[in-house]
Length: 447
Image (cartoon, rainbow, N blue to C red):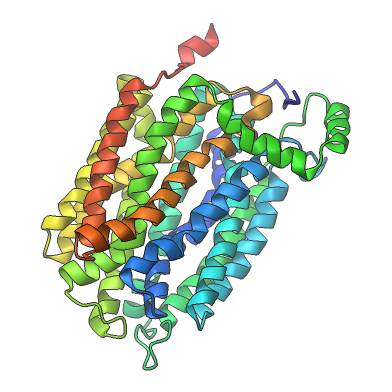
């Protein structure tokens, strides 16, 4: 593998510099949250059955499996004197995601919605993957936990607003939430339109307000770019899974069970809440759409909790260590998912979401903080892309088996998918015990 590195000079950045370089995640999360909270609703409205939902969602992780490592590999090898290394990918992803967000709620057939999910997820990955490497590029090791925490804050804030948009459209602005012909409601459509505008605006804020460090040897970078082709890049990207450092391997197991749980939640929460608590499966009914809107509020709450907890996590990590902080957060998230089975009052779901929100904040920051401390700076984007295999692989596994498990063993009752997810997240938490974390404190950095 080539050895092109970014500038070795990494001064400490101010709060507002970290704010500007992370602000794009506010927009990215608008797209991600609208997808997570509404895609199952769109699929069911267009005629999908419960056991078909995981397979239809398969578009998202498969897209990530292909896009993330390739984007990471090539963003390591990109440099433009005006646009920098990662920012061209931010901008391209933002343009494509905005198009997908405007198009998806206007799908008139199930196959159209699935294609739009492919486009939306690919676009989000083009923007999001380089953002992870951005922290490693721009911040010294002792500031990286804070950098990822800032990203988690914007992820949480964006998701709060985006997840609640259909509910707000209906209850604050009087937008129609039910259609006479069973098509996608206007409340969902306008939520996606607003999300597209927010995505583009926030990402471009980071593009225009952050300056990147140039590579140490620009001529070497140009020379090696002329030598590598697309297939070379593809081969190196996918072979990276066999070259992972020890800590990365240990974190991969944690990631697998964490993201299996998250995918189960994203696929089945709408179906579980509407059937288990609102006791309806009629997607054209007012009661179903009320329940689906409430799922958006639940997702807003867990993301809001994540935004608040994001800045607390570095403080806790200094006291307990990063891996113990992550363990506690994941166990709380698992308990939150398990508790949903015992709830009959929709308002109590908000209590369950507290645990999920704490876990989500930690999932978005702690593994990346631990990982970035052991990766070479010249391969940060590459390894971040490879690491994301362990986000998409568990989602593919979940898509492949959850529908079968529910149909075969649980009478196609969606709430059991959340129970499976809860146990999976608790397992992920206890796997943190085996992670070797190369923590560097501020005192270490001064020595």
